[in-house]
Length: 191
Image (cartoon, rainbow, N blue to C red; front, side, top):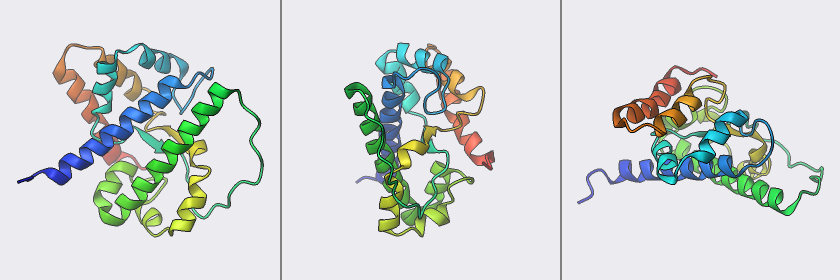
């Protein structure tokens, strides 16, 4: 009998999204900030061992967010400038991740609005707005979603440095408390 199966499944899905997002952040070689994270934070993330990054991925909320995701947007008609192969691969990975996350959030908003509110937060991209979007509208939005992809709470001066610092610590209680702090931020956030 799988008494906690749905909860375990959702936690596993969030962990997978978090792990993939951390890989995107670490593989991005652009100078300066990327996904809203300053270069020093990204550099410290890159230096973490895989098990330490996995510790951050265990955060019970999504680490990725959309800064702004205007549904009903028309697809862009402007061609992107040619990119070197490595940069193009990074951009493709970000587009695929953003589209996957958007569809997961859309489905979650329709099936479990409370979980969606925890994942999305009460601000910019409302659960009701997302759940009412049609598939074609979602598909058009997904085309440009990577441009809006960012680290969740990247404007919070302490969260991401604390996550990296805690992942490097041998103190399991510190790692757990730091990962859980994002839940508190989600509940009090209005933006």
